[in-house]
Image 1: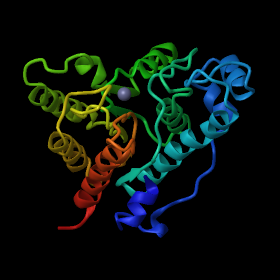
Image 2 (image 1 turned 45 degrees about the horizontal axis):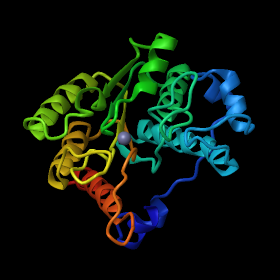
Image 3 (image 1 turned 60 degrees about the vertical axis):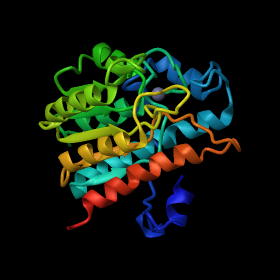
Image 4 (image 1 turned 60 degrees about the horizontal axis):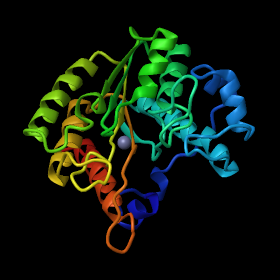
Length: 261
Ligand SMILES: [Zn+2]
């Protein structure tokens, strides 16, 4: 996806920032410490239900990317992308659904612990319920400092029912208002709500662009970090181009809103 954005001039190479991986201690702050050790030491299955060492090796970097991007958003008071996925189904004790460790919670809790924020909002627009995020918030008693808005809680399984796009925009506008008091917004710009996604089926390309523009406009000049989350479409040749197109639209919406008019 980054190659796609570079090739199309959506970003330039100098826009890409380096970052450090997070530590085991950072994962253990929001997960069962034994589970963290067992996954990283390849003694139990990760969120992909395998013990692939490459998945384990990637985990400190996906959460590290989101955390670094959040630091950047706070320093610059604007929107920034962490090109990462695989967080919101990971609960305190268990990896699940392609998610091993919950980088959303690693990031939010680290920034709270450092005293850099007093309140974080997680605006999760992946189609599926962020059950792992809710689980950790409850286990750690963080309801007053982390606001969690997950569309999957309201729209998963609602495909083809009534006018889902209108109901979604109404939900989104309310969620955006409730995020207004947060010092940082973490926005999961999932591609799987798309009407053609095999695990989605809710919003058209145009409606998803409206979603992204609504979020970026609401939090213009405010610390906002966004990432990718789910997206499972393939074209007839088996390419991920339909997913790339949706992420490209989100990136273009972000740069369009950020650009001075
Ligand atoms: Zn999903």
